Image (cartoon, rainbow, N blue to C red; front, top):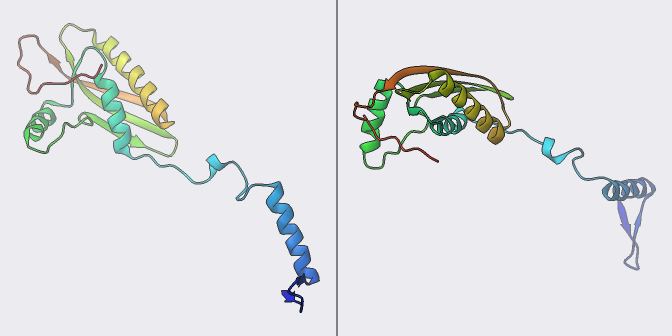
Length: 164
């Protein structure tokens, strides 16, 4: 408790004086909250975020014609044509995200004539690099299912735009 004297000055009682000295020493020597600021709190990443990153990374690989099964691509093509609809970059991608790790399942359509094993390897490498760089999560597995081969004389169900 602080006592006010007649002259307007303040005088602290003995216990308060010790508290004030301790407080002033503490504020000048260390930061508030203690510890590394980057370790305060936690960050969570939604499955959809990882799915978008993986979908874009997979589509960027030469030899990947499209993502998803025939049915999902057909429904996606209809949805994309609806005014206000947007292209789903997560089509053909399923992510399971934990606190520090993630696992991915991809379904792709490859172009005819490419070496499927090479395309799958390139997709894995590109997806792992992109997801780990952007999220900091460890990618423990990338399972790839090749659901179709795009033949040169087949018409596209939907035009795929490739980011390069």
